[in-house]
Amino acid sequence: MASTPAAPSPDAAPAPWAAAVMVRGLRGKAMHPVDISPASEEIAAIAAVLDLRGLSGVRLKGDLRPSGSDGWHFRGRLTADAVQRCIITLGDVPQRIDTLLERAFLPLTDDDLASEIDLDPDEDDDPDFFTDEIDLGALAVEALALALDAYPRLDGAEIGSQTATPPGAEPLSAESNKPFAALAKLRDKMGP
Image (tube, rainbow, N blue to C red):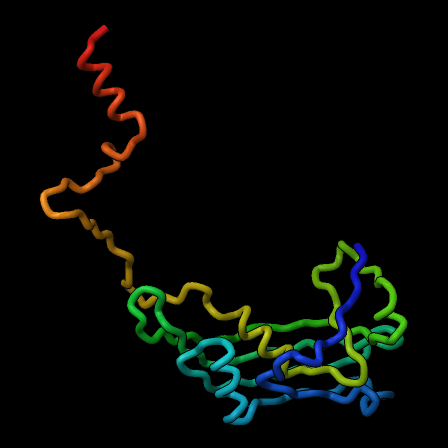
């Protein structure tokens, strides 16, 4: 499988949490420990981007290790407390996020932008690319978005049924809404 990495768009909105690690400063290290949390204004920006009613306790902890000749590998844990809107009642649905993260990072050069990069289709995850820095804040926001419940519901909240008809009309039923029900009635009246 071949893929060409996209260069970041200059018009792209700024990330709600940027926590960049300069790769040049890591040369020669066997491991770089990571323990970061966003500031309060960054938490508010993350909550706004992810349409959360509340967000607290966001923390990314792990380590960044060299991988291969130029690559890096992050392994760690993201924790957070999020509050989403119930899809049925619109009430608050709290959710504890505690997820493991593993991500490979490969250097991106100008030559790579001009050509295709071959990726192994048997790999679980395609690597991320970096130039001078690895943004662990963006990684954390992406992981948080993926860990959130896609359809948050309060316990016991169910979608009920409702029937609306004009005055004097009979509501449609599953039986009367069948396309050939009227023909079957006509056939029965006419007999064999």
